[in-house]
Length: 155
Image (tube, rainbow, N blue to C red; front, side, top):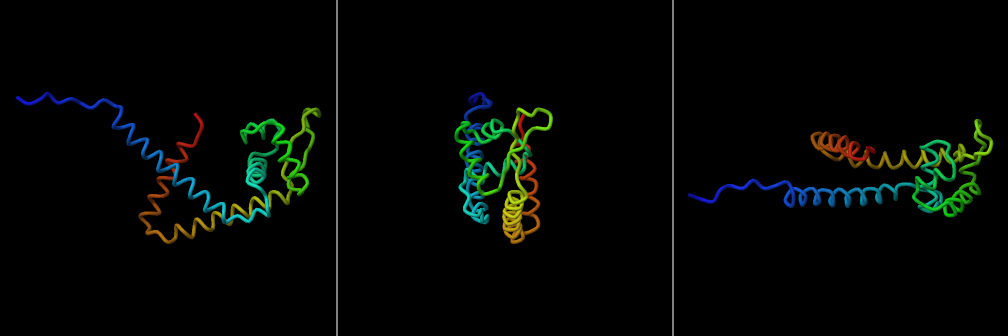
């Protein structure tokens, strides 16, 4: 008689495979985002200003504290970033209509246009890259995107 078969427990082998996939996905996402970022003429904005403006444009009016939390920076840092965006007339402060003690940040039309133009450029670049793929691979990317969106959602 041979050795009894032992079922591998869920652990090292599966986790290694999952870790490998996670590592490759992380690397691919970083490289893709860098390439897409290069497609966006941000009118000389630093990465921090561009990121903050994006949050303000796409998340709607929010307080300095909410922006600091979204950007994972301390309030003094976000205050400096916002001051620069205000100076460029990309964002403005407005009183909350329900509580006049609260000030919210809102993107100006110029700030919205800058972000929309950048997004159109990035999407156009990516669409051009996708057009070079065969149909079956485009469908595969679509399915992978559905899964990545699911992974990206908060619990």
